[in-house]
Image 1 (cartoon, one colour):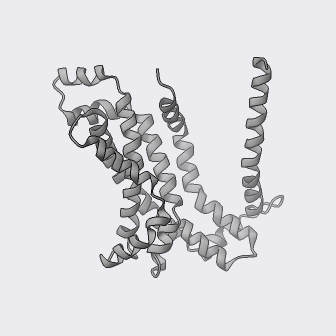
Image 2: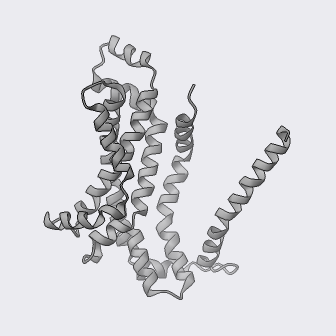
Image 3: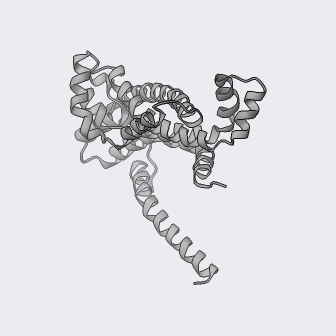
Length: 263
């Protein structure tokens, strides 16, 4: 197969999968806007009856605190494991990797009883702390890979200029690693925003603490046959994360490519 034929096949496959991915989204948008006669009243109805203002506020609080906390901890842990040599660093890194392999379903029940015994069920802390723990496992793995790819000459130049380890991290390596950091932030944001199982188990009696995906699930239960209302609610819940992705897409692609291409 020559280069032109191979390129045509690649493009055909990409177009096919793009249509498969986009087609359901077109159906959701058409149903929500009640095309061809555009009617936006379903969004107002869904907003009021679904209590999405409260659910979106909860998701914003949980996602913001989780992402900021886990990003700071991941950067510091990744810097230590990626640039320093100390006893037990290998075992500590394997401990973080182990955190990536444990599914949420395996820990959610004992986690709930632990949080309940500590009085943290039905609280923001009960939602945020497990999310931070899971996000730090991935974030440390991701940032360690980035810091290990940094040229040693850059670290040595910073030390020759008298920079401390703290200054080297925050004033030299973090600005240079902006694509990798923003990619980690975007992935963590999407995973935290879309998390459903943890809020379902931990927030079991306080309706005012439900997150957006959990609120959408209960909204679906009360409007099973009103598809326009359901699709409008789904778009309301998805809108914030889509906006975040649109603003960070270039950094996200740059971060993914920097991890894929090594010279």
